[in-house]
Length: 182
Image (tube, rainbow, N blue to C red; front, side, top):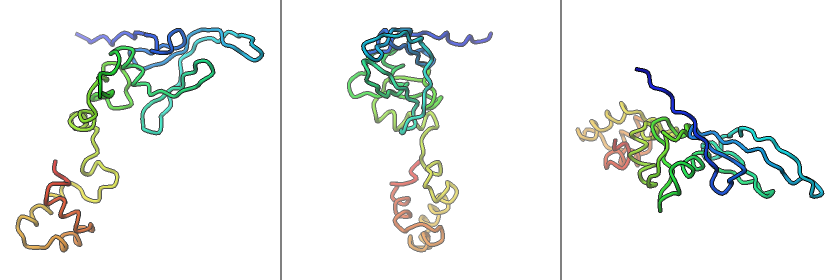
């Protein structure tokens, strides 16, 4: 048996009904409409698929225009509100295992900020703990060696730090479990 891909379903963008629609596959399109032009003249604008751009926070965004006012929206939020309903109190849009650049309905859900930045990131492999962090100076193998040295008490934290080229505070944080606890 082969799985059929989910058919694309389009729904109005909440607050922009009649102007824009969002799809279950994470696409946004404008609809055919008459737009006020200079000197109160109107002209026909053909609807089109909008090109999403990567925003400053690393999510795809689109610009929606209503009554001459252009506002930027994250695509995942438009999909979630259109298909999952308004956000429950204190909830955010959580991306699933396909990552934050996949705005398909099947990859989105409402959850708490803590879920989104904790267990969900670990489950989905999108966390940046340990050597995945861009500023990490140590890797997992080095941390294991540091732990063994700390357990043996054969060297001071300052001496261990000098060997690995990090500050003694980093060794202390590893020792207390404030860093590299996973």
